[in-house]
Length: 402
Image 1: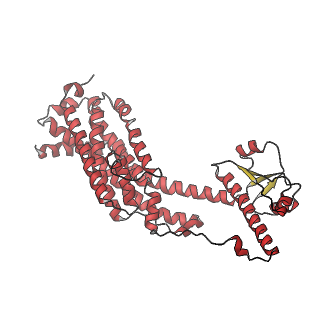
Image 2: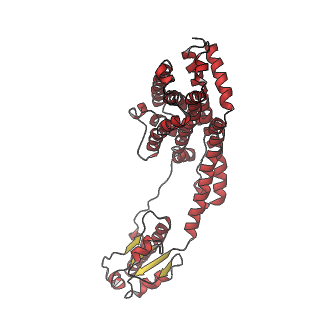
Image 3: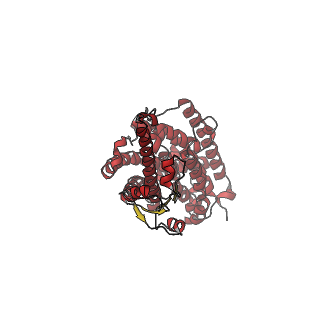
């Protein structure tokens, strides 16, 4: 093995790739610009839309209640909602977002409450729609407070203390550090974007160094050079790996700086900053996420190089590699789902294992046994992919496929 020859091929491919605009965009511009756009941009838009929805006075339709003036008067006096006259097609109006919710007051509601009978108040809403949910919540809060007021009046009329209605108080207390809570919230997003960019960063160089060489007619010239096929494929592989790792590193650093800047911006725009979440990534987490990404980048680089080698043109290679993003995105999405926790079995599944362990690292947890298992298994998969790529470069029917 002549590492000097590998280095010569690597330097040549690196120089050529840096002259290619598409490679530079995928390696540098995309990870630097994508993170602020996705985190700060979407975060600011979400906060503004959420705040606007909270400030809106929802339109609520009241069905019935003509024989119950007490509850009707209290409901009309509620400043948090706007009451509209009842109409028979209220369900259609809710679904078309003309009104936010409808409340149906049962017949003889006041009399039933006075007698102590159990009655049911139904609130109709558009489940999943933000503004409809706010409207339904405000109506429900009104009737909850109304019910508590009725209970207090009954206790007072019998000269009983009001605490009988609430014999104990329930409260929730967070016992986890704010950094860990913030990491749990954003931890799933970090590996998702980093792994995706790690793949896309290697995609264009892999295509250009294989199918691109065929399309330009330079593959024959390179093969005639006094460099063995093994040295040639290793030099090309190192170039693709450099692009993948550089993209991943920029993505991690950009995301870390974006969280710091984004938190300050969102705190100014939203009163929800009282939560005190530490939306940031520590330097230790950045280092270990990058370490766990390395074998995955090797796997991506070797696999992309091998698959792109089958193509006869740049366009054909793109059609081969584009579906590969689906197989990368799906495991990364699974890692974000609630209830999916890292274990020994999942530690052996490519992409999913790296995504899950990166999520744990960002949250401030370092499961060293799983990290070692994931790193070892990922290195094994990467070595297998690299061996396949080297083997394919030895086959004339693949290199000169027509």
